[in-house]
Amino acid sequence: MKERVLSGMQPSGYLHLGNFAGALKNWVRLQDIYDCFYCVVDWHALTSNYANPSPIADYKHDMLINFIAAGLDPNKCTIFLQSAVKQHAELHLLLSMITPLGWLERVPTYKEKQTEIKDKDLNTYGFLGYPVLQAADILIYKARHVPVGVDQIPHLELTREIARRFEFLYGKGILTEPEPLLTESPKVVGLDGRKMSKSYDNAIYLSDTPEQIDKKIRQMMTDPARKRKTDKGDPELSPVYALHKIFSSPDEIAHVAAACKTAEIGCIDCKRILIKNISKELEPLWSKREELTGSPSMLKDILNAGNRRAAAEAEKTMELIREAMNLS
Ligand code: AMP
Ligand code: TRP
Image (cartoon, helix red, strand yellow):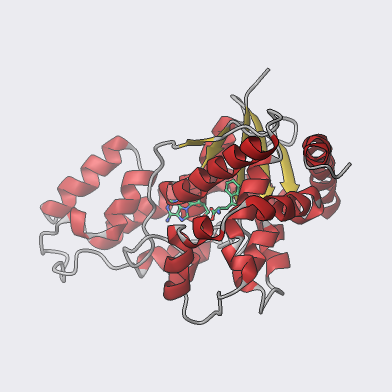
């Protein structure tokens, strides 16, 4: 029996190259090794976008298309929508009974996000409870491994603490503590050299057309000291080079670095190679996207089947939990 993996992604924007290279490609790899459950966590997206929920429907759709276009195979893994499996909400409620407020107030993302995100009022019960909902997502499937980035470690630690507290109070060997699965994955920089993010307006989206990608990369900053083609450059100061390191071959990376330092090639030549390589990487995804966009019923069938499979698993755990908490 394969060990179980669960992970989730918030549909709070369109998916970009950072999500693809930093997370999704890894999910695709894991589906051959583990019994994987991948969740579009739309309730989580509401915790910070409750005042303007209308775009979430589009983001969900885009996410689902990209999951499958990137290679998640519904015959190998379970792809589902959080809000379609109501048991997550039930477990969230029950776990909220046993989660001390202090644990939640101490989660670093809670205070950080509240100060960082100024245009939204995140002083809500739902936002404080975000990690409890995440714990419910994970524990309801008894997942052993959770592939996430380092920023999610505090949420995983809290999930483990909640599982331990549940077991201490009701002691039935029902909930198991999950481990983070920290796979080396590249940090993708955006068009401006900061981390690629939907919030920085610096992203290349998986839904961008080849023309849009071409234009975005051509307009990218490079080494600011390199004003003319004859000026020698420092590739380490160029976000274009940072993207080469992820999307180009070792030979090409060595070539553009050396040729930038000697001014043998100009920035436009260097960008052309990057555009070619990013397009090559995304071409299979583009054609699959087109196929899926043309067959909405197939997408619906995949999601319905995933939701059913997830709900059946979640319900098994909930029956044990209700009994342990004297609710059945
Ligand atoms: P987010 O869109 O920030 O909720 O992230 C969803 C997933 O994509 C998480 O696993 C992130 O670690 C990953 N991710 C987001 N942005 C980047 C980036 N610029 N580089 C690498 N991974 C990223
Ligand atoms: N908090 C995660 C993020 O921002 C998303 C998430 C929700 C998640 N539930 C999850 C990740 C369960 C892993 C497992 O990336």
